[in-house]
Amino acid sequence: MSEKNKSILITGGAGFIGSHVVRLFVNKYPEYQIYNLDALTYAGNLENIKDLESQKNYHFIKADIKEGDVMHELFLEHRFDAVIHLAAESHVDRSITNPNDFIETNVLGTANLLNAFRAAHENSFEGKLFYHVSTDEVYGSLGKTGLFTETTSYDPQSPYASSKAASDHIVRAYGNTYGLPFVISNCSNNYGANQFPEKLIPLFINNIKKSMPLPVYGDGNYTRDWLFVEDHATAIDTIFHEGTLGETYNIGGFNEWTNLNLIKLLCQLMDQKLGRDKGSSEQLITYVKDRAGHDRRYAIDADKINRNLGWKPSVTFEEGLEKTLDWYLANENWLDNVTSGAYQTYYKKMYS
Ligand code: NAD
Ligand code: TYD
Image (cartoon, rainbow, N blue to C red):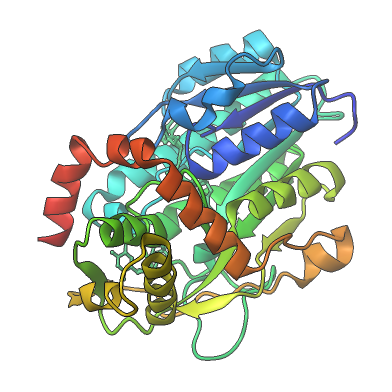
């Protein structure tokens, strides 16, 4: 993207990763006008971007990407130079319970944005960009060895992963068919501030804090590859500005952990921070029924983005985790607010 592209629509910017991306772009590029579009589902929270409200180059649009006509009108009104598309239903367990929500938002919603983007730029795509943010889960599950590269065949296993895979395919098809300029990135598991406590790390931090059981799915020997969310945001910035049109970039930090080892580390760090006896939080570990169709291992080969664009993570896992724990402990109100109300119903349904 050239400097001239000044009006950028970021979708899902009230969510976890989106809020970090919006913050980075608003603060780093005062010459850009940043439009944050979000439907404010259970996962969207204006508290996540409260510090940006008074910035001159920041605008919030409450809208639902499932509504094609609304997207069409919006794009005709603003003719955004670029889109960074993060809005999605993002939790695997919810996709098992309600797959259609994922198909509607992740597949249809993405198609609505692509159609609106095309209509707004029907004369020329010159200097425009549609950046689609995706996940490593589209590649399926690895055995004990091997890494996901950009050429690994798609083999999604959950309704969430398959809805993201479908959206990736649709973006590429619009590139091929209509010449729509795009880039896609597929990132590993993120952690950091503002993550909704349905995902492993914030859910376990909250439960340790409240001395509640720590529900480990199956044998706990599932492997995930963890990246600090602010590093994902800098990778998106790098790809947005330096990436090659039509390319895919895998994003990760070569940081694999089995769930059990990660949970034990979390317990140790939390014991230290909360001044509890060594080993006390680990006693909260409870093995529960496994997730249906649970992917055994994810691991990203991030060599391409490192070699071609010079991007690498800025923090080690230990540093990132420490920052994350400190944030959740310092932001009790945030955690209490998002875990009241509907969260209680979700939690009971999922875990009791
Ligand atoms: P999140 O669930 O925290 O946030 C999603 C945001 O999208 C929320 O603010 C929500 O209100 C909004 N949204 C949902 N449906 C919408 C709709 N129909 N219209 C408009 N807005 C809607 O998700 P996240 O973890 O921040 O993930 C963001 C993106 O990154 C997703 O596309 C996800 O697939 C991808 N991703 C996530 C991870 C991860 O570890 N969390 C890893 C790789 C890729
Ligand atoms: P999650 O954070 O949901 O991310 P994803 O499934 O997209 O990788 O889960 C990370 C891992 O932790 C995954 O192997 C499932 C496991 N897990 C548990 O064992 N217990 C839990 O309560 C949750 C939410 C996840």
